[in-house]
Length: 99
Image (cartoon, rainbow, N blue to C red; front, side, top):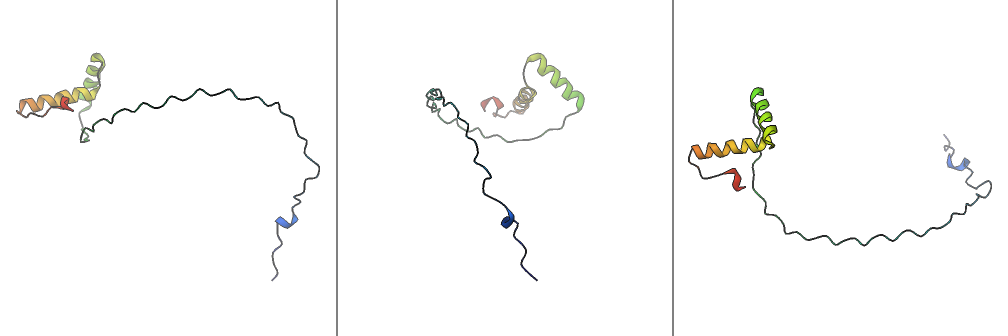
């Protein structure tokens, strides 16, 4: 069995005629404004939070959406207020507003 013929060997890589060069008018780019140095903000202390999911009945969810819309707050804010009330009722000192 013989060696396979090279595909690259059959290619003609020489240009058949010289390519025409187009002259392009060189325009100097506009100088870019100097970037402002980034302001160093002090790092914010990380608040330790625990993620959790809750399942609530759809009518309750719809009512929460309505209340949040009218009070221009997020549902999360309403739930956090409810958690504060639970802590107060049971005499615990922790509050969500401390976060």
